[in-house]
Amino acid sequence: MIIIFLLLAAILIGIILIFSSKKFSPVPYFPSNSKDMSLIINSLDLKNNQTVIDLGAGDGIVIFEAAKSAFEKKLNTQFVAVDINPILILILTLRRFFHPNKNNIKILQGDFFKLDFSFLTTNYNLKTTIYLYISPWFLDKVSEQVLQQIPNAKIVSYMYPIKSLRKMKKTIHGKNSIFIYS
Image 1: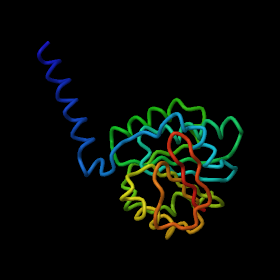
Image 2: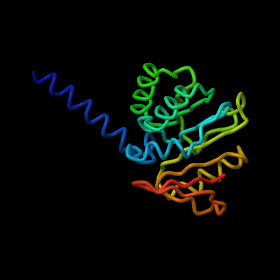
Image 3: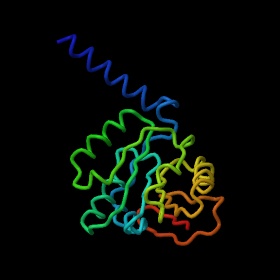
């Protein structure tokens, strides 16, 4: 009994260390609010031959709901979930395995501050939408990096506006605000 308790305690401590480590989780994990999910999916404006990239995908709530919506509408939309946290990558991979649209979902473990976005969009580069729900102090840096590599990308930011982008197309108000830049 003590061995099981010690094993569970070690696993719990390992998970806490992974989530609190700046190497494995430099951006804190906060899932998008499920009450805003329909507004978020509408803001992505899903279409055929589109790539939707969720940077800091967390548990994948947005990417999997969007992929489900695209599947139901019979759209050929590609989805990429990017996260650095190995625990969240495991969760994303398991969720993808059971998703009806799993062939159009890619899971990528990586640091989105160092990511080459161009390779994510080479096969279907007509439209690219980036979904961001990250700490506000990282938004400008990430959006600048994205737009340097994919100049025509549409960026959807949940909860926080991107100060460096002035050409805001639209703000949607739900439980939290959604900011759309194109």
